[in-house]
Picture 1 (spheres, rainbow, N blue to C red):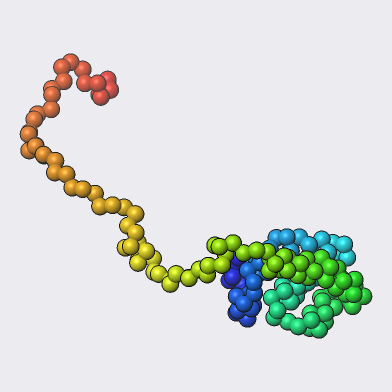
Picture 2 (tube, rainbow, N blue to C red; picture 1 turned 60 degrees about the horizontal axis):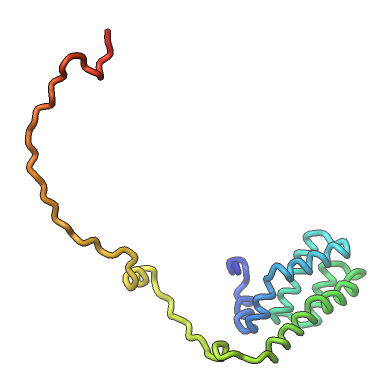
Length: 165
């Protein structure tokens, strides 16, 4: 998830959510449902964007239900808001609720019950020093013979690099 454009309030709310719901909020599946909803009701692309933002805020628990309904009405217009709110409840909120109930009632495996301890953040220098990727090369001494001054061989006949004039 790209967290550069998400305000701090939403990020803190996302951190408190169950991981299944947090993953659903910015999923492609949810975006597809919202776009299909917008196409069915003839919404403009900016209205679909506003609707997506309001739905994400409601799923994250940042805004209350009354504010959510008011924001949807402002985003899509009062005449369409009742139908759209009904579809949002059925297609998004009800499915999210059902998924959360399923995961809560599912038996936990041994690995899921063990809490993971987060590793402290380490600098890149510490990581490189702890796990060197390049082992130091073993030094091998080569016998270097002294340069003997040899005269280049004299050409016999025609020089192959010289063009005839």
